[in-house]
Length: 180
Image (cartoon, rainbow, N blue to C red; front, side):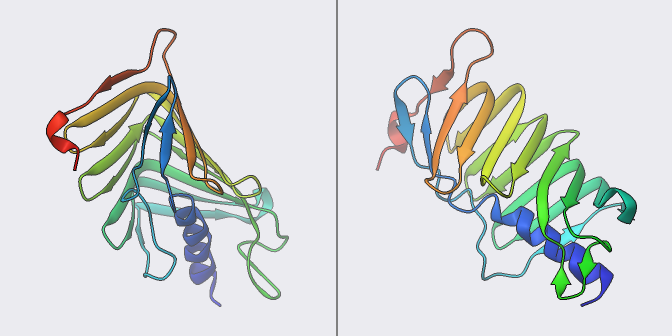
């Protein structure tokens, strides 16, 4: 596998962070945002203005208009850094690196169909499979329904999520016409 191919594989691991982002929100409000996900069986396209691989630091930096697309889901950010554990860079003897965690910054926007999630920064820990999106504010939307807070934590294994307030309360605006 080429060096470029393994960096793309690292981003596939990043894409897995979005799989199954069903959510139960803080303050006893629950909903499912199943469309806001990526599929492991569709190709992933990654674009950025610049890619820099820093073998010594075990990381790959995507900067400038980062865009990850898979199926109907798109993730955009100003920067994305993939940290890996393996020695020898993104490609080690048997293939792609073992990804540790991924950081997204400079405004993160994830869209799929009528669903979106946005925040200032995002992280994904590969070991715990926890996605965190932070910002002032973090906004989740599904059609006309809007959920606003400052920190979204998604437990990818269970699909549970928690939206925390910005010192006050989580704000929710529900459109009664959106209920099927």
